[in-house]
Amino acid sequence: MSSLPPPAQVKWSPNVILVDADYIDHVAFHLVVNFERMLGRRVPPADLPHWLDCIALDGGLRPGDNDVQVVLFHSKGVKKMQHFSPAEFAKELDGIAFRDNLGEFTLQSIEVEDLTSTMDLLKESIELMVQSETVQKVMIVADMEGDTSTLLKAVADAEEKKKEFIFFGMQPLAPAKSYSSEILGYSLMAALGISSDEVARKM
Image 1 (cartoon, rainbow, N blue to C red):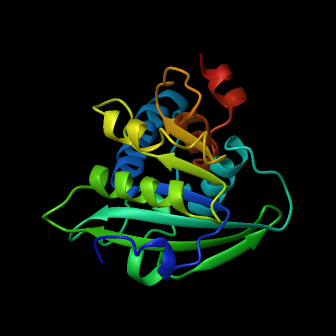
Image 2: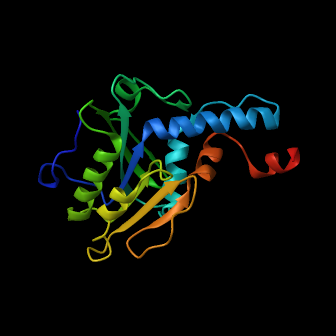
């Protein structure tokens, strides 16, 4: 599958998390390498459900009976993430749901075909979210350090549609009325089991 169905063919949750899985796996790898050197211990794979909880909390969700739809985009031929657990898209993640104090999270994985790109599919997805009647909050985890103009333009109508878009990256974005931004590193550190106190003791 290489694209999302139009809004009329799917019931979107009020809360959606769109994830560039290749990107977060790349960031997690660099965090693991750096913190293993700093802390002098092995850093285990990031706990994916815990990471999604952290993203949801950073995105403004609070404990309750929330419905959260998670879409993981990954490159063609990539079967799993190397630095998360669970990690296999087809066997462990696609179509799986879990429930905790924030509500129910339903996961879907999408393989990005050769004729498109993850950024293109993220743009398409954002445009669908803007037009969807059910979506209220969208959290986007992507490489926001490159050319993100297409993604930011895609949320231009978000304020008018009374929808909230939050971008997660390693650097903050310039503030705008149609979106906000959060730092990705904090949620990944938490999911990797790295506390600020432990880091402070090693500095």
